[in-house]
Amino acid sequence: RKPNSYKSGNLYGFVDKNNKIIVEPQYDFVTEFNEFGYAGIMKNGKWGCINSSGEILVNPKYTIEIGLPEFIGEYLLVYEGYGQPYYYK
Image 1 (tube, rainbow, N blue to C red):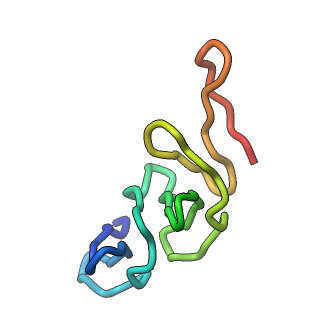
Image 2: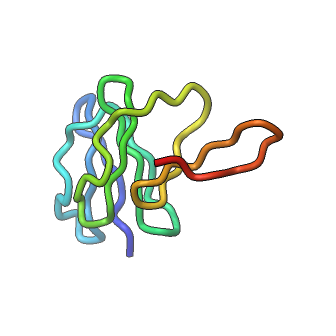
């Protein structure tokens, strides 16, 4: 089972199914873990990615203007041109 996000004060982190903290609250916003086991993390207006163990794969560096990011590991899903998706590293 994937970790769940939780909020403490104004910051977000992640807990496992037993509510044991996996990632201390330190992010301004997070996404839930996707089907591949990755979640987006936002800090200071920039997005990055962690895996379900809480390991940072991409330090927050991307600015996302619309919607929430989707990551597969180090790759960020991007739609450009005629709406065709591709993954950017």
